[in-house]
Image (cartoon, one colour):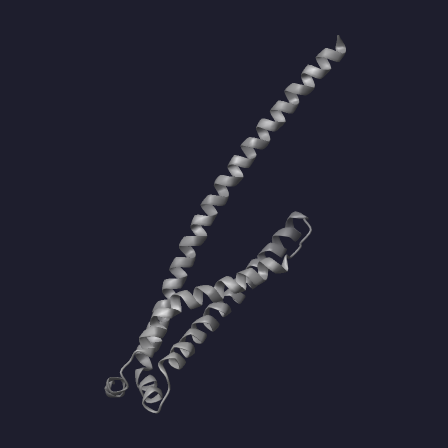
Length: 157
């Protein structure tokens, strides 16, 4: 009879542990969705900031762009120039973000007594994603620069 009680108690504990794990998984999934939403909004705001910076750059450099186009530069060369500038800007931001993230993670791991490990794929993915944000949000200003009329651009003050 002790065997039956022990087995029944074991089943109860097992079910409670399974329910606890299911609840924990649900909470983790909800937190992941919320963090994903926050990250998406942050990337959108950052991308719009990059776009505005690049639009100001195009506006301030209208004469330079006009001169380049007037002496024979192709529109796609001007487009490439501004896309590269945008990618450099966002990759620099990605570098700073990765540095701050790794520093904070290392400090937190040391403070809490955990082992600190880095997955290089995640770090490289962060850099690649920051470059992608630069291409996506830098395209509109780059296209605007590439489509400038050289005569009108040279008249711009």
